[in-house]
Length: 129
Image (cartoon, rainbow, N blue to C red; front, side):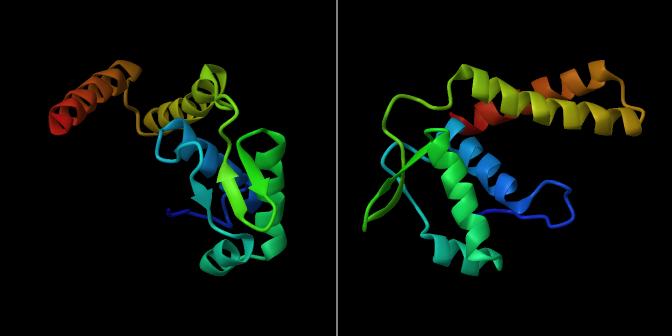
């Protein structure tokens, strides 16, 4: 599991971690029961303060995305799907907004962006076959 942290992003690091774990769950790359790295291990990998990771995990636990098993670790929650359709749509909306802003800055028409997305979808669909 790889995380990409950008200290100059303007988004607090703990929120970047929260959002990335939520994305991995929504995308199916993390499933119920999967263990996420221990706080100290992830802090060492990302070169951030362990308190930052602890805060991210606490936020994820409050949201029902993860659950802690005392003495065993932190796992993706098996209680229902905390990332209901609303959460997945929220994540995708943020990404769509960023794409549209970038396209606007490059003077690319939204219809061209839609055409590109359809082309990319066709390529991805073919590669899965």
